[in-house]
Amino acid sequence: MQNYDTVVIGAGAAGMMCAIEAGRRGRRVLLVDHAKAAGDKIRISGGGRCNFTNLHIASEKFLSQNQRFALSALARFSQWDFIGRVAGAGIEYHEKTLGQLFCDGRSQQIIDMLLRDMHDTGVTLRLNTSVERLSHDGSYRLLIGGEDIDAQSVVIATGGKSIPKMGATDFGYRVATQFGVPVVETRPALVPLTFAEQDLAPIKLLAGTSVFTSVSCGKTTFDEGMLFTHRGLSGPSILQISSYWRDGQEISVDLALNADVKSELAKARQVSGRKAISTALSAFLPKAVAADAVRRAKLTGNLADQSDAALDILADAVHRWTLKPAGSEGYRTAEVTLGGVDTDALDAKTMQVKAQPGLFFIGEVVDVTGWLGGYNFQWAWSSGWAAGQVV
Ligand code: FDA
Image (cartoon, rainbow, N blue to C red; front, side):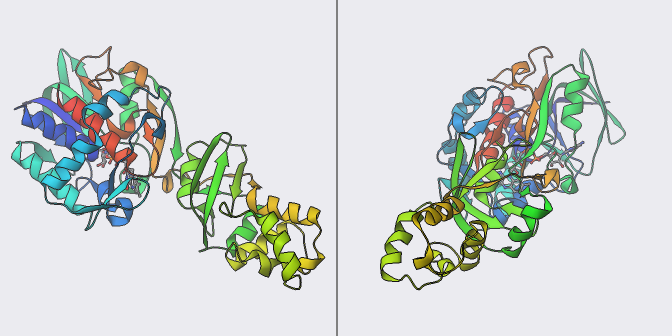
């Protein structure tokens, strides 16, 4: 029987941060992961440059049944704290847009920094290793890679269900259920949206085209890029709205948010009435997207042929394109998992299960989901840090 103060399960962003902090406090820490490398999602994130945090962390950038739950951890180990570590490790970074901080070089630099810190703080890392059993009997008893292990505390940092191909499992939710901790229903989020065949056919024809859009669902709106694909719609504005969209709801897309298409075309009608209507509209949109909007508005002919009412219909097709997604691409491509371990069951300061001392949940497995843009990693760093102070 091996003894540890704490066993952290899952060597992703949250698990590594927690292990480092506990190690710094002189705790004997075992960090276990069934993958063959630590931090795989860090490696592929941000197109290989890891969007590791955001300058504008605020509660409204997180979805949860209790939106205020994350605030304590996010304030105690903030974006500035993580930026300090990145800078201290000599990693160069830049703001890309909307406060999103990316490495100038590869994401691997962040993983290397964490691996170095784990080494320096004496954390034992075991990869390619599964947890076969977990039980509690005064202390926590685990069977890990065929070995019996005893620990004072166990931290579940196994992430969400997104991208099963990369080793995502429902382990964390199963442990929650085993210990009677409620789990808020999970759903894929930050995920491309898909459409029924009749809506998809024209979208497919535009595959590869991107447009700066405003996409709304209910009262929520995101102004960011949108990408037409062979499967449906993607790009930042769609990924963001997917976290708010529910089955059966419509989304509304403004394809030209910086132009008033009706009044611009009415003006152009006076001076260049012989232009084809789709040519005139392509002053504001990529040509093929303009042609598709004209087709949806069922207009033909030149600008001079269009009545004010016809221009109103076209403006609607451009500024208020209403679509009903059939679904999403699901966990196969979702960046994150919405829902998870119910925050009501956790102490917001430590991430400990209130009714089960010594059991902690951190990172994406918890019902805290950030917007696109570095918010999810910041939650992983902050919640991992918070647990690391007490395990
Ligand atoms: P994470 O999923 O990182 O780690 C969980 C670990 O647990 C994994 O190493 C896994 O192998 C292990 N594990 C799972 N089940 C296990 C089991 N049964 N036994 C043992 N180990 C097990 N966020 C952001 O802020 N900025 C960004 O740029 C991006 N980009 C991005 C791109 C892509 C393609 C994806 C899929 C996701 C992002 N994200 C992101 C989201 C971000 O990656 C995510 O929120 C964090 O990695 C969550 O960190 P965790 O440590 O909670 O889980």
